[in-house]
Amino acid sequence: MSSGLEDVVAAETVLSDVDGKNGRLIVRGVSLDELVKSSRYEDVLELLFDGFLDMPANMRAALGAARVEVFHHLQAVDADLLALSPVDGLRALLARLPDGDDTDAALKLVAGPGVFTAGLLRLRAGEALVPPNAALSHAEDILTMLHGTAPVAQQVAALDRYLVTVADHGLNASTFVARVVASTQSGLTSSVVAALGALKGPLHGGAPGPVLDMLDGVGTPDNATAWLDDALARGERLMGFGHRVYRVRDPRADALKGAVRLLAVSGAIDPARLALAEGIEAAALDLLKRKKPDRALDTNVEFYTALLLEALGFPREAFTCVFAMGRVGGWIAHAREQAIGGRLIRPQSVYVGPVGRVAA
Ligand code: COA
Image (cartoon, helix red, strand yellow):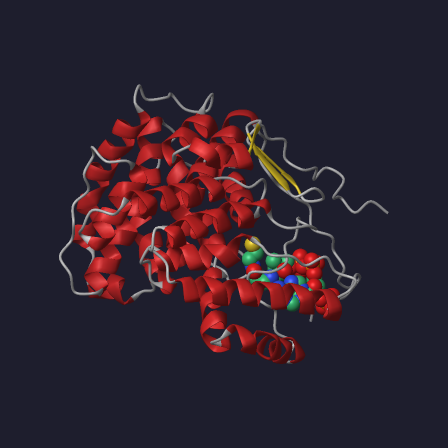
């Protein structure tokens, strides 16, 4: 019997390739290892958008201008919106941007997560908003809008590396959502808002906050094995480990571990916190190997993301918003690729219910 699923082949894309067997991520032909060496987030946007949107003459300046343009939406934040979690507040503000398919719409959507998250966090803390500065890079401006002071070069480099690392990752759940919405010829804002809804779940982009909860729970490296063993015995999953596609170490984990170590060298992260994380990672990998021998469970992107974003001063309840700051570039590129060349995505369901019943 036909399942009807034969037509549902993997979407073809020129954007990125996740090689789960060998632990490699390729973005438009460039491996992640290469990409993180020198690229800024603006460079990756150019890479992703090429052929799908009209490219601005100067991406950094155009994105800076878009940050300035979207800033006024923060004036609409009222007590109800402020009472939402940061990611729900971000979703509400992004939904205010006009739907469209052009570069202008795209750049406002890229600008939105940085501007809105920094603004929401300041308002939640009872602090005055810091307006964007179009002359800065995206990463530097986000940190400046968040803290109200100029970040040091290593902090900017670390956030840039994070944004580059998470910008695109094949057909993950939120990117799939973005493509489904785009396949109906809806606009980019609709795609991005829907994708953010998928990202916020703890099994996708919501894991790094719980990673820090785990670090706090463990407390000291010598307590790691006992604490993690108890968690596994309770049937819990260890946050920051395992992946649907990678059967070896997630290459993004090492890209971010490198950034965390750089922050440690520059004194921007507490060495004891790093030692705790490394101790937990080693204990978790050892335990997972012993307790789940038939599964290949290794460190994923979220583990060192947690440490990195904490060191940059983002509160853990806003980590998913920071993920969105980077992934939004991938969502938009995929939505454009789907809208330009794809068909309506309409998978068939497989009916497994009863047949021949008579209506009461
Ligand atoms: N800790 C403990 N056990 C884990 C685990 C983890 N982090 N990840 C997977 N497993 C176990 C499951 O309990 C399950 O075991 P069982 O078959 O004995 O019930 C099995 O491994 C499932 O493995 P797999 O098919 O590889 O995972 P998945 O595709 O169902 O799930 C994730 C992938 C990412 C959802 C899962 O690994 C997870 O929940 N990780 C923690 C959350 C996280 O870090 N998310 C961020 C992802 S980038």
